Image (cartoon, rainbow, N blue to C red; front, side, top):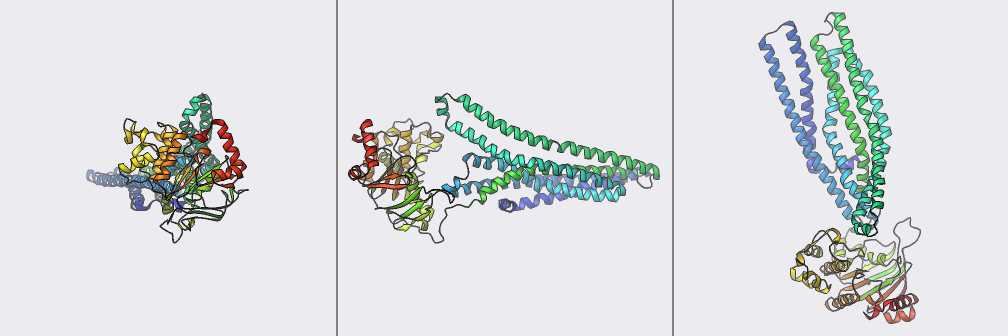
Length: 581
């Protein structure tokens, strides 16, 4: 995990190395100061001249300034290195998610990914900052200060031999009890973020059902659960401070007691005042180093759980990737399914699709109808490799889709999914997702095809009208038509409309189909619909049931040969005569 995360340092290696380098300089300067102070005090005690005092004072000033400069440089480089590391880590995490197939994304919730990209990375950044700076300063200061205290105080330094094991035992016990809590609390963070995300996105539904109190109560429970876990962890880690204070003051008392006894009993021959002063300074440095180590310990304990969660995403290998020798051109819009079966995971008990054999010629219009859960969407997602088949193969343009360069294939297959998504920005910016270089004339042309130009022209800012996040300021039908226009801008060889006109009235739906038939005759059009009227004039209609093709043919053929299609047609015809639309 450490090796995986350290790879995100990259261009900030220099700053990462310079941070501890300057920290070493600061520590050395700070450890020299007590020695000079000892000599100065001893000189004053035996009597000395003003020039000697000035000499020592000048040396102390130079070393103090050098320590200050080294500390400033170390802090500067540390800030640059840690922020750069976090930037690269966030970049790698985001780009890894972009490479995921649908099956990879299914393993992580949206709220969990948001937590990993924000809270978890912040925790790891703080830990990284402490590792390259404080974690260098503390142990180095500890070692040098102990060596110096042995040199100055001899047997007095044995006090540390009794205090340090007590401190280490306390820290180990704290970690043992706190780590499991931190592992669980971040999962609850995911649930908390999920509650917020669902509530904000579904605000209109919440208000329409007058369930604000219910959602508030649900959020409060999630928030209180996170608070309770953090409170338990913080209560445990709060013991770190009293343990450290005990060790510090115990050391000070013991050193002062034994040093005074030795000075009195030896008449100052064993230990003089200057040595005692430097000994106390070194003991403070030792104990402050231990305190810093305990702070590092607490931060790393928190960050370890975050680091594991980040590494999980970085180590997740995309199930779908480019072949070693990819094909970079899609010849035409032919689509062939050969003995295709599919299930979402290797552990799934049943196939989502079974024994699919299908041949669609380029330029055909194909309708797909079936009940909820009949795997209509799953079928079309195999065409652009949002999932890979479990058995058999899918061919586009006569070539197995697994042989194509992914970008090439997906640029040739435009999909308007069930859940239409518009992004924050103008209508023009949203449309140009289909083609960044599209002219204004091309934008208007595809919008006319999708029957969107009329309502866009009626908006105050027309194509520069701002779309709120999720497209909340346009109706469902308007959103669908903009998404269809965006897909048409790709000039695809295959256009898949996954129930993409469900919010459009039958008259407008008919106009869209007529425009596509006349304007893009060479594009293969696959239309998933719940309304028979949306697909009854298709060249071929598939009736899906339980992951299999139950019937196949034209509207007239299926009315006589397929009971499911006939039942749907008759029920809709009786319900409202939609077929006349």
